Each structure stands twice: as C-alpha cells, then as structure tokens.
Image (cartoon, rainbow over all chains, first blue to last red; front, side, top):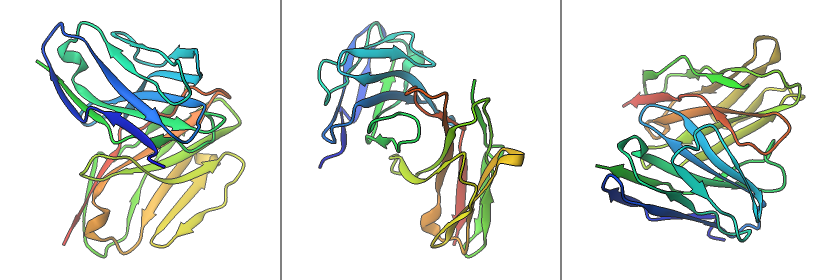
Length: 114
Length: 115
C-alpha cells in the first residue's frame, strides 16, 4: 500500500492564482481530512469528509473548497490564493470512525503564495 | 470545544538525559482519545501512541513511556536515555465530540538532543 499520497510536494503561487492540492489513499478509509500547519504551530483542520459525497468544514475553511467524489480521493481547491495561505498542507485518512482511530498522514505539500 | 496545551515550546538536553514533554488537554466529553505524533526535520508526521479516556494505564515502548492522568487532564511523554535521532517536534492531539471532525493539536514541543 502507498498509504496517503499528496501532490505536489512544493508549489509557489502568485496572489490571485488558483490551484488544487491532490490527496489519495489506498487503504479504503472512509474518513479523510485536510490540515494546514503554519510555522511554530500545530495543525489546524480545514475540511473533512466522512465518505464519498459528504464533506464538512473544520476550524479554518475560508478560502478553500473540497470535493469527495470517490472514497480514494479528496482534493483541496484554493481559489484566489492569498499570502495568508502560505503553509504546509497535510492530508490524512482514518478507518471507520474519526474518533479514536489513528489518522494516517500524507507527506505534506509546502505552498508559498507571493 | 477542545483544547490541547503544550507549554514547552522548546527543550534542549544532552544525549542520554531523560526528558519529559508535557501535554494538558481540555474537553467536556467523557469519551475521547489522546495521541502523540512525532515530526522529524524531514516534515512527515509519525504516529507514536493513542490512548482512550477509559484506559489510564501507563504505557512503555522501548525508551518511550506515557503517563495519562485524568485527574490533572494530562498526557505526558517521557523519553529515557535520549538520542540525537529523537530530535524532532512532538505534537499532542485530542479527538473528542463523538464525531469524525478531526484532531485538535497542541502547538508542539521542539526537542533538541545535543550530542
């Protein structure tokens, strides 16, 4: 199993550009998550999904959108990138219940908006 | 709302010393889970341990041990005989609320092990 994969690993965006961060998992996990990690801070939840077609906002959803058309994929869309979105983005997945199940994390995407 | 506090921003010790990383959590839920993750300089997140609110037994795994005390809402992590490879940022995290809404992370403790 590849686990949780994320692409790209690095990206530089100009202010106002858009992009999609890709996330895929091959563990047949129902639950998937997007977090962002700012320097010197812990991770904060952006969006999460409990299954295909179901998504919900986390703590910091503004400026982002998600979709979940399949169990395997959970892309994160940035519209009109802003410098405040410079961060490291982690995707994660877990088995059946979000609570109590270990979350498996991808390697992260380092995004810089200038 | 849940909250995790890691008061130690950075700890520096000399190799072979023992070191304890503190974690204090807040939740109104009676069922919750606590986690520790390690983030080495390479940046990935490595799962270390999960503990549920009904199991207060301490756990030992090699040089690592965890002390869970509900009375003080703490879940501390001790590394015995530290090694340079233990240098990393360590995060404590909490999952509660009965749903699937992710983990609440502390801000992390940067552990530096000097040779």
